[in-house]
Image 1 (cartoon, rainbow, N blue to C red):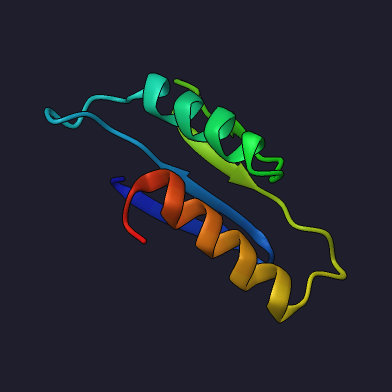
Image 2: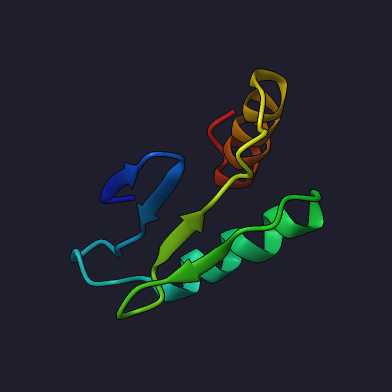
Length: 78
């Protein structure tokens, strides 16, 4: 990951390779792996290397905790 940015509830997480080049393959891997865990997100951006996270307005703390846990599991950091 090289950058995490957002506005309101919208969050983008950008993936780059070892040489800081865009890494759309890793973004797609995360999208597919987290989908298998029941979370729907997508990849976007000029290189499709940025996760697009757009939760519903009614999201609660329990839902956020669940999402973070699933994302950490997919990324291998939790």
